Amino acid sequence: MSENVIIVMIGISTLLGATGLAALLWGVKTGQFDDKSKFIDAARFDNEEELRDAVMMEEKKKARQKKREEAKKKEYRPAD
Image (tube, rainbow, N blue to C red; front, side, top):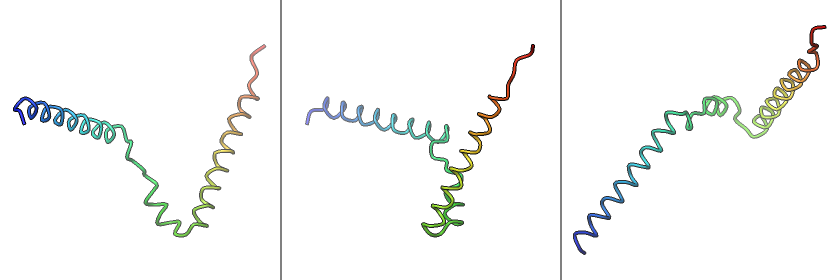
């Protein structure tokens, strides 16, 4: 192989490696890999049925929160 080809290959591979490292550092910095409840939930909910129950309870919690927010919007009355 020609020296020029090897130099170009090394340059491109270095650039790709640096890009991958930058993307990894950005992901770690912005919390893309954080899953605070994953390991706790894995210990608490050992089987599939308990996990489904936990998901259902979480959905109910979100629905109640949404309902409360809608109720607050309806209660608003401007001053006379």
